Structures are given as C-alpha cells and as structure tokens.
Length: 252
Image 1 (tube, rainbow, N blue to C red):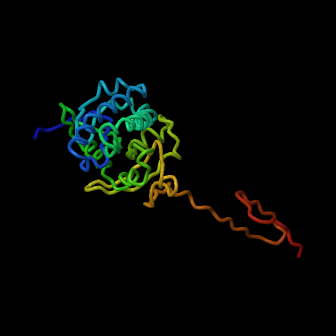
Image 2 (image 1 turned 90 degrees about the horizontal axis):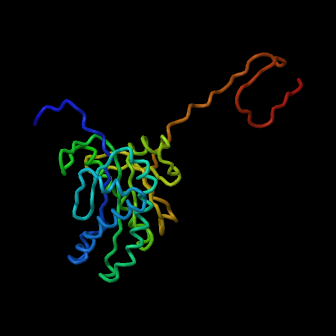
Image 3 (image 1 turned 180 degrees about the vertical axis):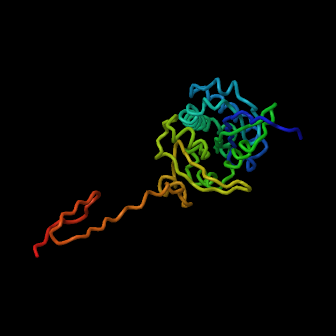
C-alpha cells in the first residue's frame, strides 16, 4: 500500500440489479443479462442523458445488474429524469418477454450515492461504491418490489442521505419531497438513512404505503415558551405569541 496524500475525486455512483435473477432458468438469466445494458442505455437516451451513459466512469457488469459512475454535475438531471424514464422503458420491455417465457420479468432496484471514488481503471475503489451496493440489499428496498404489482411497478429507487442533502434539499433537483419516504436501514456494516422513491407505485404500496419501518423524524422544533403574568388585578399585561380561548376581563 502506498501513501495517499490527495482525496479522490467525488463521483456519483449508480447501481441497479434485477429482482429474483437467480430464480430464472439459464435461458431466462441470459435474456435478462442481455437486456440490462440495453434498457439502461435507452432510458438514459430518452431522459436526454445519453452522454452520461456513453461517458460512464468505471462501468461494470455485476451479473444480475450493472454499475457505473458519472460526474456529479449530472446528478440533478439523473434524479429528476432518469428514473422515470427507466420505469417507462422497463414497462415497455415487459410486453416483449412472452416470446421468451412469461416467468421472465425484468424488475429492478436502483441506488444512487455520491462520494470520493478512486477509479484508476474499470475497478472503482471506495466506501461510496460499497455503500451504493449495500443500499440495494436493504430489506426496506427489496420489500417495495415484493409488495407492488409486478405488471405495473418495475423500478424502486434508494437515494442516499448524501444525495438528499446535496441534490434535493438544496433544490438543484425539483423532485417533490412528498414522493420520497425516509427510512433507517442496516445492511451488513452499513447503517444510515435511505430515501425511498417509486416512480410508479402500485398494489400494497398504494394501500399501506412504503412500509411500517421508522420514519426519520424532522429536527425538533424549539420548545414553546410560557409567559408568566404578575401584578395587580388592574395592571396592564402585554403578551406576544398565540392566545387560545376567550380573553376576558373579569370585574372584581
């Protein structure tokens, strides 16, 4: 190991994988593996982000999915446009599977994170890459596909807390906060907050929401102050704040 005296560049990291990939036959797995880069490339193109796909950093095939890095300046556009586009492409692709077998269905989990990544070649190194993969494995993320209609919901997304803070809370990406649900997750050595997003919710997700896990609370508001009034019965008191109920002066 050599001494490192420079922080690696910050990269956006996107990873997708396929639901129940190992449960398909060899022929089905081959069909899915061939389709994954095709649907990703088409989704980027439709979102007007074809250059992000073509210029991808450290693209890597994971067997049942795909991962890539890209420049952080593209994050707002990816958050706002890519995931909706990917849901549409997957839904269209689903109509073509009967030729292979109706049991074959391409449904995906996607995770997006950002952080310093050392990428000297095709193998990127860094905790940011590991975290992105961990988010995919969170039970809270897997549960969203399991509880949705497989003929309607083809994509669920896990956005890291860093993405939320840097891209959404700053309003560089104008994705309505009401479309996201924050959850605390623990996967292997990773523990943190994930923001769940489903471009097209269906099934039990519409009836019961995104799960019964703990919602990450908002920062506590300052405690209300209590005013104490002293003095005689006919002294004048001025209260600044909120009044509740009737304010009447009783005659002695």
